[in-house]
Length: 83
Image (tube, rainbow, N blue to C red; front, top):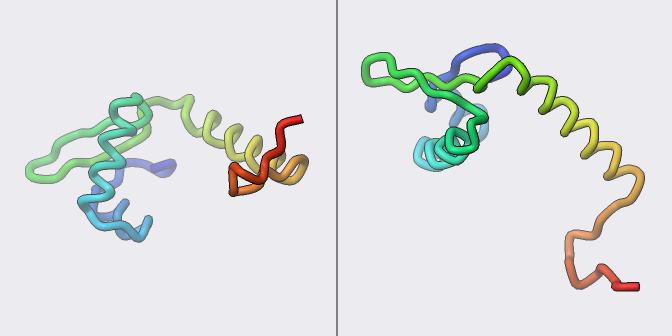
């Protein structure tokens, strides 16, 4: 959605999800006000909620990549020792 509006069908195909699963995820993103929806006939077109989100997403990706390199967290919560 960084490049503009996308339909559920397009987003589902790109994410490798069913349209139903994509719609459920989009509902969560709408509730969090991360995406907005515009109806066009029978189709729903989704876009990012506002112009601040690309910068926020880039910062989150940078933080994730940086923190993963600096201090890897094990996938298994039982592996985390409490010191």
